Image 1 (cartoon, helix red, strand yellow):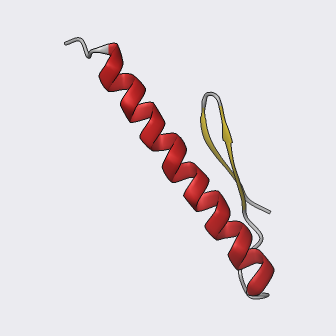
Image 2 (cartoon, helix red, strand yellow; image 1 turned 180 degrees about the vertical axis):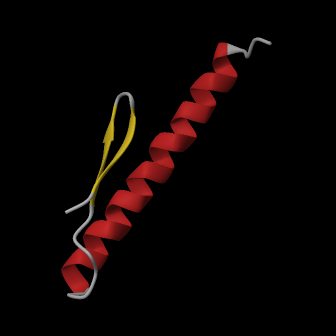
Length: 53
């Protein structure tokens, strides 16, 4: 079963967008909420990496 590259590209774009939103949200929470666990989420070219303390 093969997927069109355009579909894959669009899917990849959506993942990047979601990852960016999560990054902004986690940074905002980390700055404003001192009880928020300091988790760093970064997006790499190969996927989303969740870095726990």
